[in-house]
Length: 57
Image (cartoon, rainbow, N blue to C red; front, side, top):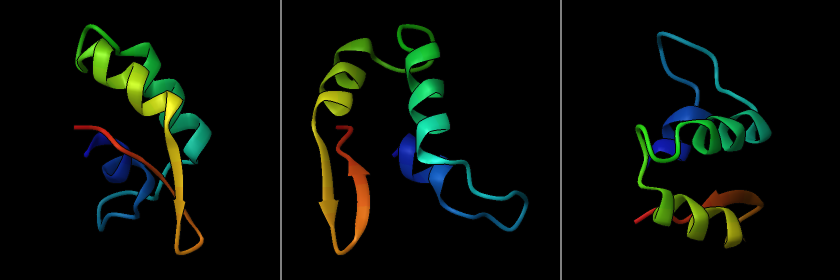
């Protein structure tokens, strides 16, 4: 999932804030990401085990 990849720390970079990840998904909707899936994901945020998730299929 793109959102998880952006908001998780990686050995080669720090994690991105959730708001910045959302902005990146919106900015690249229709270019890099399917706009239908981004629309659904941004409308359906979920909290699970004290963590914020987006479901992107």
